[in-house]
Image 1 (spheres, rainbow, N blue to C red):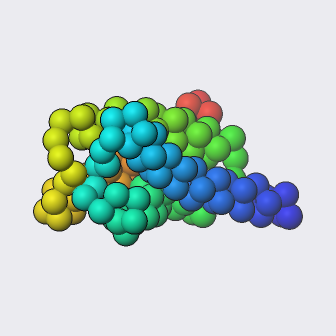
Image 2 (cartoon, rainbow, N blue to C red; image 1 turned 30 degrees about the vertical axis):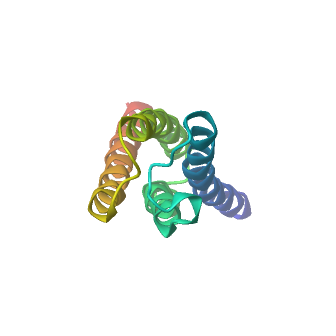
Length: 134
């Protein structure tokens, strides 16, 4: 039981910390390379933090409510990797395509990225669970 709690706590912390590193790390790197941020306020914009929390939430929920077995760990890891690739590519296109986003476009980003993370995490969770059971 204690091993399971340590494992869940590590996965929970890793999900949240990983989301913040992904969101803020890509923002910093893209600003260094291309001189622009996706959001209008730069790193000080609170929407970056909100985006990181919302994107981490599906992985946190799977960690908390999913079974503590190999399939859950696989789903979280695979989902995080695939979401990271998706996020980096889309974030790069947004930085290169236009000026920093205004409030209405930023609100849509705060919805689209977390929903895509949720869909990806849920699909991988059920796929991994069924594959291990079969």
